[in-house]
Image (cartoon, rainbow, N blue to C red; front, side, top):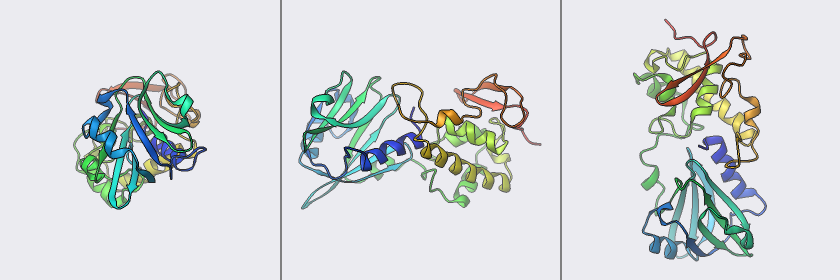
Length: 274
């Protein structure tokens, strides 16, 4: 599943790519897979989105936020969660009707925004305020203040790995970036979050944000056709490196299941603590 750096890369491409989505007018909408649209009902989704202009593109956690305007009406926000296999691409209209196109926004200049989603898990919402969708999410991992991070993490009794993955606590961190951050911080993924000292939690906050920024700088991580173009996979120290030598100490990287998630770590470098 795309994590914060991959989603940020998509949002930046929609803002600044060639062609870009920002500033385009949505002339019409086609919904090929109705379950992709979570809110509102499909007929209203189509009617309310058509004729609007894209005025801003941002992100919170793993959710892309596309602001649309149609004066004198109030703005409406198209929120997109890519989930397992979703892709958002601005294409020439003749290329937009892909085999797995679920929602198509037909744009000006003979372009289209294609939401392609092979596994059909992705979702779209068209709402008056992003908080209608994002209200249950925690602060974005890139902007969460250190003091809030420390307080939230240290009150959790769960292991630190699933704590970092809890989107209600911290929005945006996924399996890859949690593993890489914990390795850099020297923290065992099973260590109880409330067992971290304040200094350890402060250090982890900085490391998480640094690793996410590095992922963004590399355009995220790519594994297959779902999310092409990223390079962060070339910088993995533990994720997917089972049996390979740790970059820090040379011990073999181990793999366990934590909270039903595959977890990679170095048993020599990453300690459970006292």
